[in-house]
Length: 363
Ligand code: ADP
Ligand code: MN
Ligand code: MN
Ligand code: MN
Image (cartoon, rainbow, N blue to C red; front, side):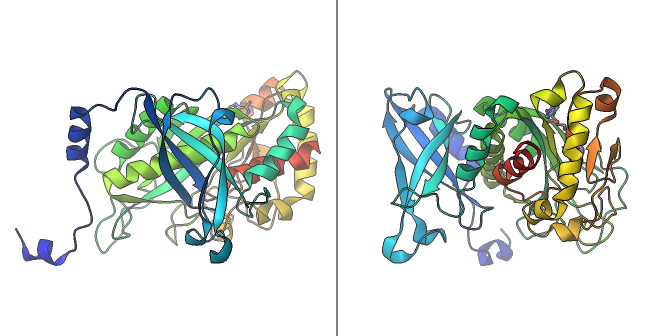
């Protein structure tokens, strides 16, 4: 063994061994594990912890509330540190299998008020008020893989790969980096019950996308946050870092967005294009307000280059990937369908973005 191996502190165990050990000893009958997942103090990180339950819950309302130490997640002062977890959506656990579950939760102070990072609660108010609109969302999550030493995955040491061109939807070892993780993610997320609708390699090498949807109302946020959770858990096994930074590499490299495709029932019905056009006017009037909540660091991404519209301007157009909002040509052709808000950054909060759009166009 090289001496370098001894100077590095041990950081990883062997996931293959773990799976072997778990295969040998079955989980006892009558108990399940529920992993409670919630948004952490940055508003972008996820936290989770597990508990044993006796019997399988029929719904999220059936699950017990729980709590955690908010002073350790930047979410509560030390002298009053308890944050209450309320279960909101259940998914199957693709890591522990069997009847085990993942539970998307939101967070409250002991008096029962949503804490500031609980963006689900106010979003849910918007969706309750607009239930009859039957709003659907399809969210395209772009992300970038880095090795643990913060080097873009698949990039040569101390230099740059060839310019963008061969990588988008690319195939082959010289242009496609990290497909293993997106393949594993796709299966794991589908198993969990997340409505993954597709995936593709992105324009910048080492960058990927998956799409979730269409999901109705508040469930779009639940599905997207849990999808991110599964991706992050897989990144532990693959020993890579997943970045949701909107512009992970400065220069002539595409940024990472979270295009949000939207329709209401009226937009999907005959004559829906008129409803979409009315929505464009409302969105144009509130461009700055939307940009405000569409993700941190988005000004580094929305430059007007690399398939984006400049952050300071609102523009929509049919089939226009340089617009703020694109109306797919199929929608224009059919006279009904959906629109794509291309402004949200990779690190956006899907509860905030989906609710903001519906608030603007329906309330
Ligand atoms: P792009 O061409 O921009 O890369 P994608 O295929 O990546 O588009 O993503 C499109 C997303 O739009 C998918 O998640 C899909 O489920 C979603 N979608 C399709 N129809 C609708 C609709 N009527 N309302 C909302 N979302 C929709
Ligand atoms: Mn896409
Ligand atoms: Mn994309
Ligand atoms: Mn898109």
